Length: 207
Figure 1 (tube, one colour):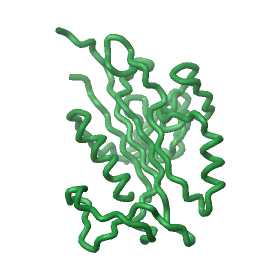
Figure 2: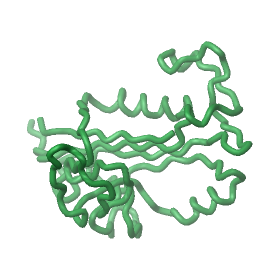
Figure 3: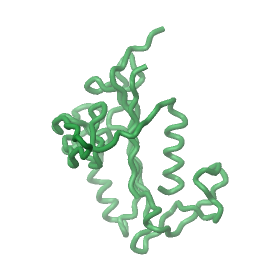
């Protein structure tokens, strides 16, 4: 079996986004994940707290420091020049999240009071590479990627998917959750969520 790397990331999650991540992992296949320490590059994907391809904004702070490769070849969540006509014409290095209609989405965000606009985007490349059921990009197996932006309750805005019942817990069966609209403390509100799975050294399936 070839190595599979899982790259989850989030900042500041409503129950709906949490449920999205739960389904993403439960109904894909078995994978393993690990802490990677400080800033690093795994399977040519930058893991160092910025979101743009060909940028390694934060250096490795391990002792002794581990040298990082040139940022000009590393993939990340978003491309710095997002001209993505479907599954072709990607700019190298690659952003794994589809940036189609980015300007229109940005206009919806800025045009919504409090920038309180929620949406999801999926992987930028989706066409399988024969004989694999997933795309292979520059030798790396791109299994799936998702970006989700949730509502927020900052500056008087209202989050449209919060726990409405006092006994609701993340670990409960989602069918028992009571969802409501309202505000929650900003420290508990995860707004942006990123997940990406990729593999290295893919081998063609055998009968």
